[in-house]
Length: 344
Image (cartoon, rainbow, N blue to C red; front, top):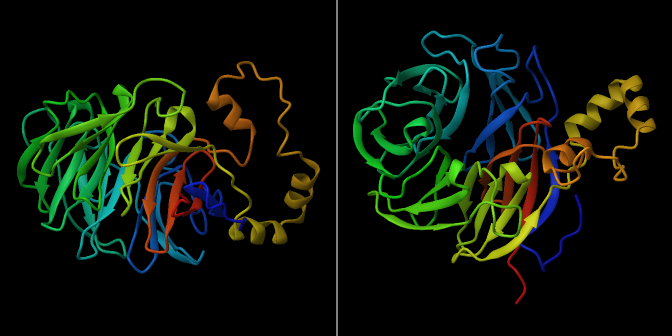
């Protein structure tokens, strides 16, 4: 854990996770979404590396905000209750686990222990049909909002899959990715191919949008997720720029963070038991910055060389402990940030 600076909104606190592939267990493998229960249990959706591949590492890992590992579950395949390209995870108010698969075009419903309860989804573009669902959120009326990415819309269903309404047509969404519901009850959409974020009422009224294409403050490059906190601050996973940006409730830029990860307790435990790995790591300068990049302006290339930086930040969650949990796919970890009440 590092010291806190009250003059910024986000302060890095710690890291959760490490890489675990074929055998599962304590770790992640290309995680792309998380959901956190009120008591701090974290459901991490491991997407693996390629759609329709061998399913290596594709599973749900359960841990908690205190770094305890609680197990994992999930089965690769095209069958009922199986994954081939899992894309989003969320929890219902009664504790059920909902998972979208954008290759199989379906939403699966599990118990907290991984027992399949139901699934729904029909491929297509008509009302009630979906094409590459990549974001999920559930409101207190037990309606599930689905980011219907290739159909450029958000669809709303009952929790048993009955179509209710469509959101987003008037805003001309372009491949919307992950979505969230704010404390203000608005729906926040990462409008991926438009390089902006959009806000809607739950009934579907377009409220506003923020952002434009670019690498500057308040500009986005393929944002993957957006959420907001109780004070109205907005947090954006600026995926293409390999960073998190913070905006105020009016969309004005507040802060940008490139990531500050150090070793997680899981990784430290692994290195204690694997001396050769630890010795190799000790000989390597993982913080070297004078690297002759092919393109120094390419954030993806830079992030790929610097261990503490974000490399494919995919999604976020805010917990009641006052922290922001950022799921980072390419380094198989979650970076945790303290959310400050900013000094005036």
